Image 1 (cartoon, helix red, strand yellow):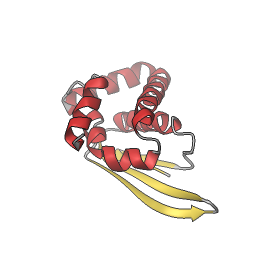
Image 2: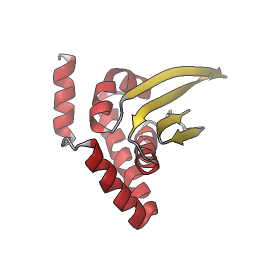
Image 3: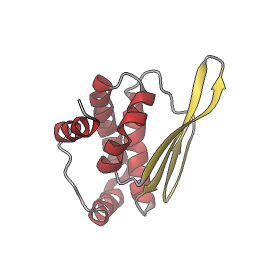
Image 4: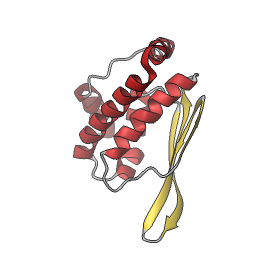
Amino acid sequence: MPYTIKIMKMMKDLDVVPVPGDMMELIVKMLYLNDRDQLMQIAFKEGEELGNYFSAFYKSMIELILESKDVFVQVFPLKRLELEPASVNGEKAVYTLRAVGVGRSREITEFVREVMRGLLSAYKEVRVIDMRSNNGFLELE
């Protein structure tokens, strides 16, 4: 199946609805101010559900990231998503997942960080060992 058709089918399966970035920022900021902890729990849970969906199509997290960057950039407020090997620790490889252009505020960056943590948790071979984030920038190792 051609790559773009696969992406379109996945986006339809996920009920992806285009939302302008500014609107998404405002919604997340309002929810963050109201109940930050609950918002982060919801973000993690939704990320887990996305991860379970993606794991049915992509057996490894590396395959998922490398083949589905376009899906992530359209589903999340991201400009760019990168995956690069950081080191090899014994038999396990360590990768750095970097997201650039994650909104314009701390609130949306934290929200996307929790969605990504939830998504990665669906892949049992993946363990997040370090996280760094700043407005619009997110890095998971």
